[in-house]
Length: 167
Image (cartoon, rainbow, N blue to C red; front, side):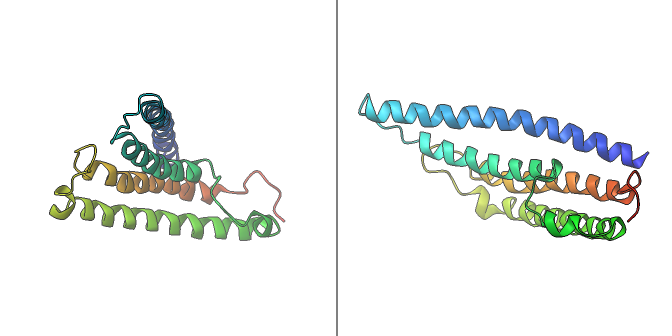
């Protein structure tokens, strides 16, 4: 029951991440394209287009990091891992996903405390004029999503190798 809940939660977060990533990519590319058009064809550079592209890239980076955990495409030592016995692989998976989950939740918690501080809410983006809370919000949201995905993998890792022949 709990495994299905974490799988469902991870699937829903992943679908939302894909949608948000697509929207952010469109916003970033449109912003850059518009900035180039205004700079080189109208000789009137936009002050906000590069800043918006940078902030969307930050969001895409943190969401993409979370998505890489979900799809298990994050950097790993697959060559060494595949040489181990199934029982050893299972232990390494459990320890690894427990570490990633703990780290993600810890960094998400610290970053949430940081962005809720008055010093951050007083910072204003120079060109866009928005509070820096919104660009910085990518950090706790990215790590929260990463924590959800890694927690799902942690729970699933207890059943790792059930269908394979034990080595």
